[in-house]
Amino acid sequence: MSKPIIGITSGFVKLTNFSEGDYAHKDYITSLTMAGAVPLILPIAPGSCTERYAELCDGFLLSGGCDVNPQFFNEDPTPGCGVFDTERDQAELQLVHESLKRGKPLFGICRGLQVINVALGGTLIQDIDSQLDHPIQHEQKVPRREGSHRVRLEKSTRLYQVLGEQETIIVNSLHHQSIDKIGAGLKVAAFSSDGIIEAIDMTEKGLMGVQWHPESMTAGGSDAMLGLFKHFVAACIEMKQANSGV
Ligand SMILES: [Mn+2]
Image 1 (spheres, rainbow, N blue to C red):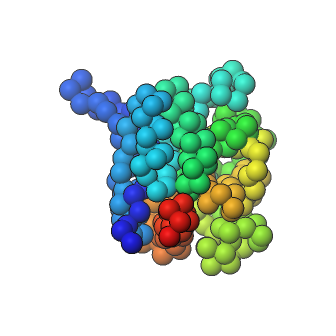
Image 2 (tube, protein in one colour):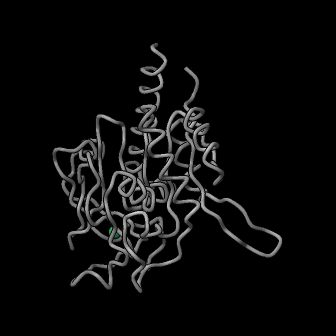
């Protein structure tokens, strides 16, 4: 069985007047190759391309990035909402539906978890610090490979099992938005101490999402977080075999 191909969604970055294009953080590539997959960065492209991506890849990693345009959950931007990229939102929302339709696993990281939630009819907190009474620090000041706050894992979830059946783990945190109303069919898998949803799960569809950045903790040497990628890659192999009738 050849290694599964995992499509990684990208975000637009302008470096200089001579250098601009689609980008995905190197730690995603590192983590997926360590877990035995072949990573493939997917540029933001017209809708017909997204359909072909969904056919081509064995699973998708929805990466981190800018904020989600609140129009996709029927709200106007609040003063705390950051920059969004409507074209990227449309492409990724479509990708969530296309891959669920084809039974291909999805792993949402940070913005990726938020996109999955919005695709399934959920809403977002546009800015945690201005909307929550007593937030903890979700935009950590320590390097991204280091953990900073605790999350409590829900015992009935796959995430709890994959992460070694520990009730509390320390994760990194590089976000100012988060899930508000949960999308249809999604299960909350982890909370931070201020009540923010930090992970989601939909076991039967091979879908999971985390608000933290396991790719950077993996690149920093975390075996537990590498385990999340291995689990995702195993799900991609399993679904690929099931889809091809092997
Ligand atoms: Mn957090």
